[in-house]
Picture 1 (tube, one colour):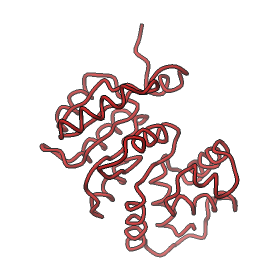
Picture 2 (cartoon, helix red, strand yellow):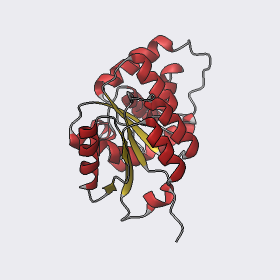
Picture 3 (cartoon, helix red, strand yellow):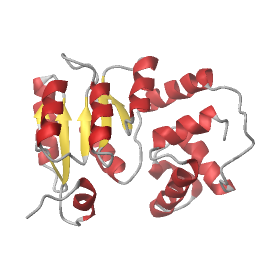
Length: 228
């Protein structure tokens, strides 16, 4: 039987998410793998400690649904891994899990296509929520990182040169503002008195109108072009 792609696998109702772990700390790597394998909706078929091992597995195995990726790997930056997996499997998503909070590393990871950015140590439940949120199309970001993103993009953003608002409705602009503020989908739903499902539909429309594929890129575009 042919192997299912990440897209078809994620659509299967009872097929666990394939989550790879790339982390050089052996104890943390093994703990994350055990945590994932304990979940009925997840499995961890690969846990490695170097970027080279990750890239080798990516060349040989079917791509994962999600990768938990450290940046400070011993042989290379995990940001290289983010860029590589996006070129091989655009449907795969990457959550950065690292101790690094420097502006440059945050910016580089987001530009490479990371779908989330969590700081170590993170509560196990927060990591599991992040994996599930990313699969649903959200982009979990540590609040401290979200604040740094706001400051970084505010400094980098050039003056707006276009009056276009991409046809965003007032509701979509409100939700986009909440994304920029660093709120999760659950928090946005609670703040606006809407269901999680409704927020998800609005987010898909926002991404389509802005021609982006992730929360981080939507936030970057909103700040760069002064959309909110």
